[in-house]
Image (tube, rainbow, N blue to C red):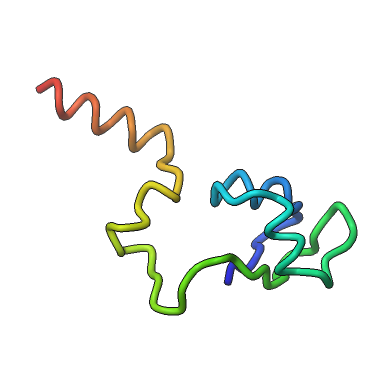
Length: 77
C-alpha cells in the first residue's frame, strides 16, 4: 500500500512506482476522480513480504537527483 501525503493523482503515483496507470485503476476501483485527497490509501501490485529495503525491487523506486549526483561525485573521487 501507499498512503498519499498530499494532493496527488493516479498518474503521479504510477510514475513514482513505475506501474501502469490502468493497473492502479484496476486495483483501486474506489478512486474515480482525477485528484486524490491526502492520506488516501492506494493499493500497489506487490507481494506482502515486499519492502523498500529488498534489493530485488530496488530499481522500481526512483532515486532523487541529489542522491544520484552525490553518488556520481563519490565514484569520481
